[in-house]
Length: 358
Image (tube, rainbow, N blue to C red; front, side):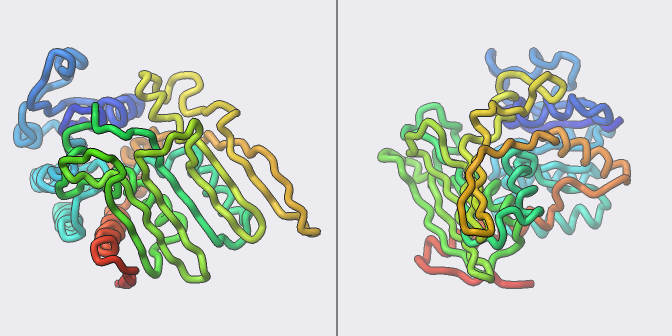
């Protein structure tokens, strides 16, 4: 069994990591770093049998810790991951990996030098809608793809209730690093690096004193004429938000609503609970296909529920044991950061940017 220490005790740790770690028999939630507990947010009360530390330095000096999970704001990811790797720990970094490719390269090289595992929590590779779409594409159900849209649109016109680091401009901040990192990662998994990138980053909110870029539209241009578009919006008053709309020569797939696992985890449902990760049938996507006579046939298409976010930590435990690959390779996570940096450059300069090949 591998002892896990978590740096940070916010919603990321409590919703997306601890319940999943606790569901994997090979992992033991052993320690947590929380600098400023409050009456309503106290790891000591929530997990009385887990060791508590006030600083990451204390955690990494605990020889019983095998794996460190970094869940603090993105601007701190590099320093905490570096500290853990320097002290011989395996490391999971919450997305976005780090603010820059330069920092990513430093961590990747350090992990290699110290023979430690480094991986990034791109958990939305295990979204049920993404797994469904990936299956359709692998079976060539839509034919050659001409247009790919991926959205995380919400209706949050006010900053009220937003986390502090989501209200101001800082390294690793903004919609493109937050939700955009998920969308870019999914497209990278499906299609690899694009040839060119065009991006528009900014704020949709009327009041935004901190200059936080709360919205983004990024066009990824591929050989063969396909354009993949990611869009993150905070002003989208829709009852059923568009998630995917993918159009090809043989058909199209349209899906609304986000994957339900986050909702279930927030409600304290976990991988061991009946119905975890299973969305209502009314949320199923729509598949339209073209027959040999050119007729369009449209029908509901059931969402695949074969795997959940638990798979990430199951694969990680196997990788630590030397029995498989890490769930997300750090070099892939670095490529996502590289695309984000190019998107920022495109938006700042108002032009389409070529994506350099290594």
